[in-house]
Image 1 (spheres, rainbow, N blue to C red):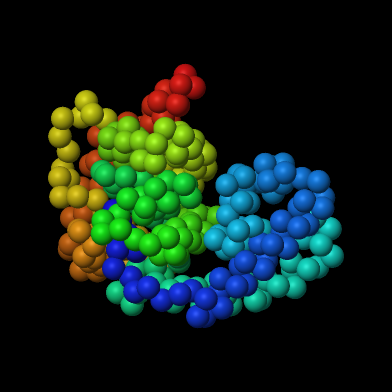
Image 2: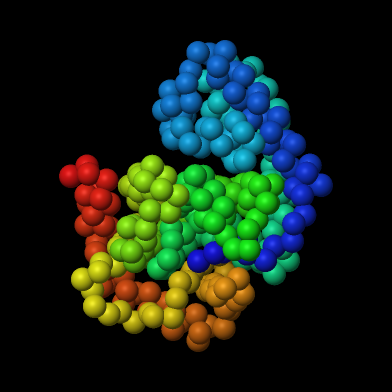
Length: 287
């Protein structure tokens, strides 16, 4: 599913000042990390995050959560510097959400507040699971071609959405991925390996279950394409589908029920989460 980025207007994020705030915080984080003599990998280990996230925050393309800033303040001896900017970062996050086009904004808001997120994908890795390099490759190969500035904006938007997986309490998430998604080396061998490792990292979280629909499964009840199912807090479940850049947010209870029914059957037919992670490890040569 192509999600939010197919038809969005090219409004620079700088217009609302959000990117400027994230860039300044990122530069300060890098300065203090290097002053402490820590690599991105070492600092990420102390923080409980991977080096890719640290790199993205330092470059201003990923939004640091308040809890991240509080912990970084303590670990780097920032003496309250990062805690002080938390209100500005939260306001910038709110403004940054307006970068999404109006037709997508309702979905983005629902996704950000959802207590459950479920996805079926048959072409590529869903946006919330993508590495930065994978997302870069996806947008770089878009037709018609996108200019470099637009690609960078779209990658940043996609990475920003992934914050939903890092909040507390975390949403319960499940994915059913066609096995073909695991074999398609989008971005080349190294990007592909990095993406498979990302699936393993996220798939091992307590709140996430990734299941693979194997090639050996000759049929299943959904041949109509990918979809997302969201359950916003204290609100009814909704579905989202998109075909060739044309989105549809489905709120009709009966239509949503049909998709939920299909998804339940598909989860029962797919490999278990443990079997799915074992398959990914095998593809990486780790088994």
